[in-house]
Length: 213
Image 1: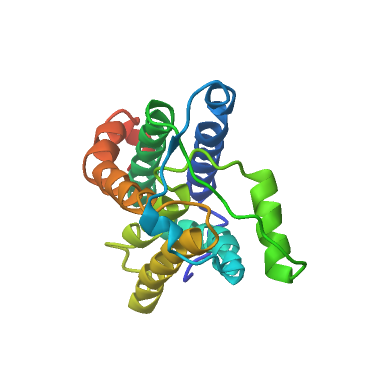
Image 2: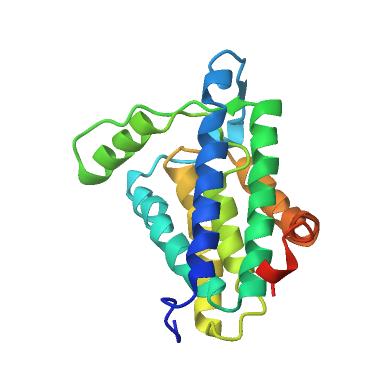
């Protein structure tokens, strides 16, 4: 990052808004889902994908990637930060609607052994129930980290390329650790792109002009 974000309070405000909305969307429907019928999202093709616990590393490192990319993207300018935030918040709201309208689940394997990666997968399974899967928030967040760099003159092209490669790795990781089904990936990309092109601009119009200029 070329410039310090210490004087850019809007960066931290935008990050706080995104984190708060994502936590609400991901957790608010849990009591409701407990009383609903969950539809199986995995297909015979999903069952052919091997379970590879080592991919939990990419799954976990994605959180760090989101933080770094978010700060860098928001530091581009306040209008860009507000536009990105509005698009992502819209995507989260749409995701929450889909979670409730079509609740899904998958069959996860029983991680056997005491290896380092197996223990991490076992912990993930224990703290994260197999619901709220489609669209994948892991994929959607990584997609936004890549798309958010578009038009950012301060972000090197190499880092933009890295974000695209890491997006592909995240898509692989959610499948190899058996945390998501294949369908969760394209739905996440579609929701993200629709939000960037239509939902974000619609929500941005409702933000006071003094906050987005």
